[in-house]
Length: 463
Ligand SMILES: CC(=O)SCCNC(=O)CCNC(=O)[C@H](O)C(C)(C)COP(=O)(O)OP(=O)(O)OC[C@H]1O[C@@H](n2cnc3c(N)ncnc32)[C@H](O)[C@@H]1OP(=O)(O)O
Image (cartoon, rainbow, N blue to C red; front, side, top):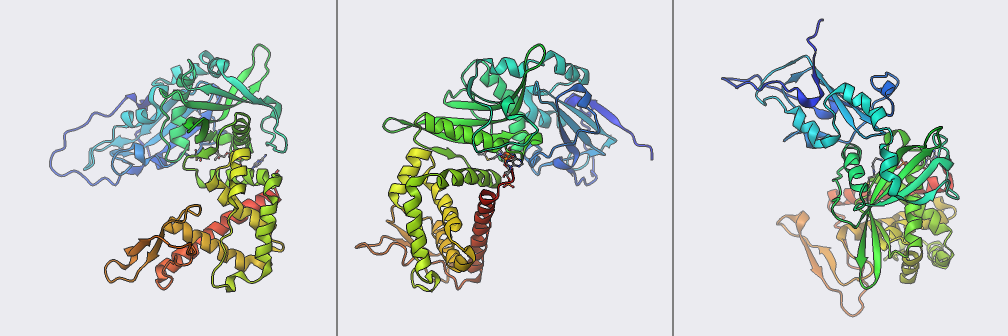
């Protein structure tokens, strides 16, 4: 079948919008992710090369109006190449025909512009030239960056794709002359590959970029390549400390799953410790990132002697008798002084330490199979408390479900326990409601699955 192929060089050439008259044919549209392919390339030979696989972006529907679909095109294909060296991009848009149906014709130029902004180059030749004209872009941009780490990290390894001796982590204040420009070229990568992310405010000087760079010595001058990066916010804590919040982290797709994300996080941890930061938190960690972070923190906590007595004491309580048969299961949370020591020395905040604590207990129970029923009861207790939103440190309020004929699933009372009443004794999820019981069970299973995944990785690392 001969197909009419039009090429809209870059997103610039748009089909003219036709006036809709009478009934327009129904158009079901096409999902953006179905017709857009992204290629990350580092030489002009790689552009159009069948050897370069496309990489999967996050859900792109947010960039394509109301329902996230593209309308009005038949046989639409959008191939986007991103030059990893200069961070320019080029979109090759082809389609067989357009039809001005009931949804009109999507304005591809403005949609692509919303993602790629000024990095997009309208002309392919111009794009190909960026590989030579902008060869030194990253080197120039990071020239005033502060090298905060280079080479291997003790006890951690990365896969052979990059020699550890070629790795560097550079820090740049977002307000420094080059960092804002560099970040603005990184924004399309953030939008494409970090789910639910928004660009950081480059006018706020409290942001820092941590760049994981592959620096290779070459004949004339060294070549620089971005392997990954993180945007971290430093902010004040009364009266005299600073906190760090890791808000965005991306390892470029071809480098993912090889230890680079862990490497970058370990360097950031070292910085937080060395610079007497109050604590290091993470803004809305994805499930995968949370897993990696917990694996790293568990290794740090297992080597942290001051919490060993607290772990031993929790294990003793566990192994004394059948917990699941007891009327009230004790809460297995670390003592306050351990929480404080961990924050002060390792910069792990309380919320993260509580998550790690569950893994530490799991790892210390030997053999775990013998205690699994009790362990599940303890985790059920924790999950139930999390759902009810009670702070374990300040048990001033409790939420209790009450039977009601009006919106039964939404009926509860909040009360304050008096006279040192056991904080947790009256907290209940109504287990007679099959839905709630089922939901709780699912959440517990999910939590135990995450704990096991971390434990397996820690006991038996991939590398
Ligand atoms: C706050 C936020 O920004 S949340 C959003 C986080 N960012 C994203 O989701 C963007 C897309 N994803 C990414 O950029 C990356 O995948 C990150 C940042 C999440 C993680 O970085 P990666 O380099 O992929 O992680 P890393 O390789 O260190 O660890 C991932 C896995 O590789 C394993 N691994 C570690 N070292 C090696 C190695 N040398 N060789 C092979 N595998 C390794 C880890 O054990 C882990 O395995 P597991 O998940 O099976 O347990």
